[in-house]
Amino acid sequence: MSQLNELIADFKKFRKTSATKHYPKELKERTVELLNEGFPRQELIEKLNIHPTTLSSWKHGPRKKVSSFSKAIIVDDNPEIKVTVVTGLKLSDLKGLLQ
Image (cartoon, rainbow, N blue to C red; front, top):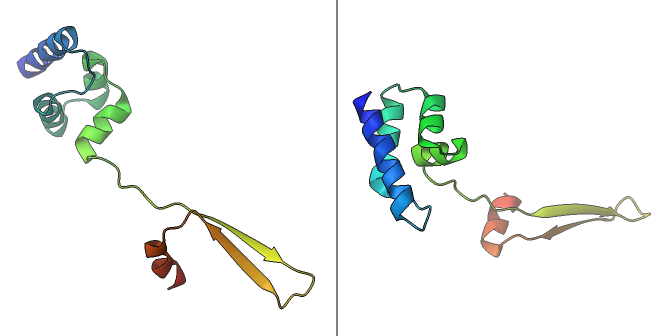
């Protein structure tokens, strides 16, 4: 419990002295360490006054961005003619789409 109290005090000190909301790596690591030791997630969120998503990103790291694209199928009166229009796709991703 004393680890949590020290962490809470450090969070409060950080918020008083910092103009940014980018938490120091050391605070993030200590928070994740408590979480991994079995400390209740919801209690950490409430006592440290952080968003649940923030805690998840600290634990799991940044999300990998997934390429997004849109696809539309256009069918003419002739059923043998079918065109697929793909937008927002990088050329490097096209190879994976065609396989």
